[in-house]
Image 1 (cartoon, helix red, strand yellow):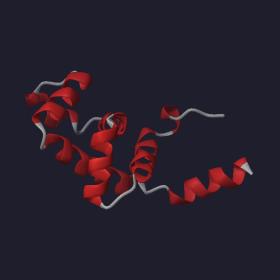
Image 2 (cartoon, helix red, strand yellow):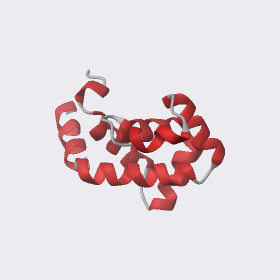
Image 3 (cartoon, rainbow, N blue to C red):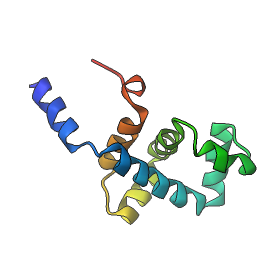
Image 4 (tube, rainbow, N blue to C red):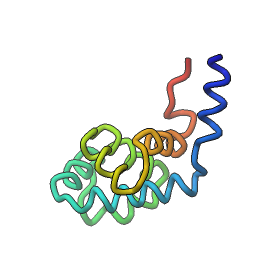
Length: 105
């Protein structure tokens, strides 16, 4: 039964391209709120001038979705605004984080 559930979740996982597009949209959403973008940059250890360069580094887009998923009110607002479920955002986060970013049971 766990195997079936796991397989079903993998079938619903977005492609890396779709997950990346979602993360870019999430970053735009976060950037609309000065407090949120400030919190994200503080957590990521970035200065505003470093944001563009950091966006090209591996893991950056996963970090965007990780930040958003940790902020429930913002996650809910982003998901509603984008016509997504919070679970879809979390699934995209997992796709971008790769196997090293997931807990295994």
